[in-house]
Amino acid sequence: MTGWPLPPTSRDVPGDGPFNADPDVYDFPLGKAIPRNLVYWRVPRTNAISVTAKGLQIVPSRNNLMGTPESLVTPELTGQKGLAFIGRRQTDTLFTFTTDVSFSPRVVGQEAGVTVFLTQFNHIDIGIVLLAPDASTSKSNGKPQLSLRFRTIGSIESPEPTIVPMPASWGSGQIRLEIQTANATHYNVAAMPAANPNARIILGTASARLVSGGRGSFVGSLVGAYATCNGAGAGLECPAGGNAYFNRWRYTGAAQYISATDIVPEL
Image 1 (cartoon, one colour):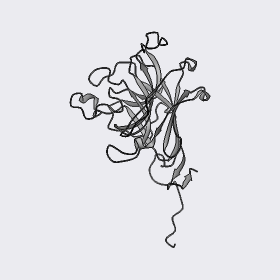
Image 2 (cartoon, rainbow, N blue to C red):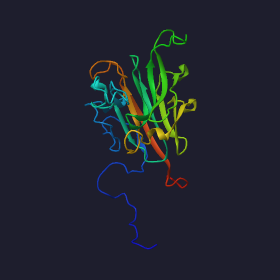
Image 3 (spheres, rainbow, N blue to C red):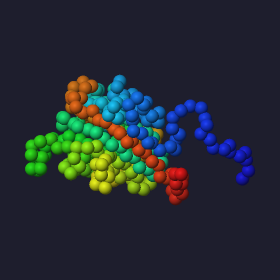
Image 4 (cartoon, helix red, strand yellow):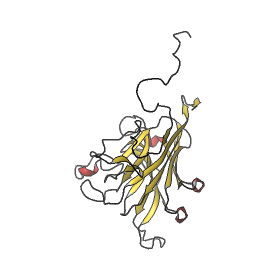
């Protein structure tokens, strides 16, 4: 095959911001702008997402990532007023995404986590959530239980939610949440104390089919972070105390499938 030679590769181009294939290495120091490759699904409320002295702050929305998008009864929960969610495009078939979370919920239902997100009808979530005590177990002693929760929403059969009480041995430090591709067709979600990644717990595995269309066109998946109070509160306001802070945001591409059998490693 003959043709015009391609120009040499160069990063000397106008503008600023990351290149498409760059990894994310973000620590959100105070005074720095939110990186330009991070995007929203629907316009968030003013000051819902900002860089603070504690890191990237997400003020929770009453609606969770699904909400009630087709409801005429609870319009404040449809997501039309914005989701408390920020993410980046999944630009690699195989990748690892992690971020460290500081979160001290006060009210049952308050939750912060990470997600693979296509639409409000299609997403894979792992969250830190304060749950009501389970009357069937004596472990909760009648008190709300801080837990890790894996759950999915999609138009195909989904795995059952997994709930794991937060291990006492993890203490009160930051929790690292992880989304990693197990292969070209499945995601693993995991959690660990940021200070001890060797204590990693895999909470579940989900099919990529969950975020590959179904309700509307496929426009590409996002991976990112969210906060919600899962309907608690009134109007557009959640109960106080559910703000989440994210640090050490890392996205690293591993490889890209260019056909069913051909794979190109990231350099």
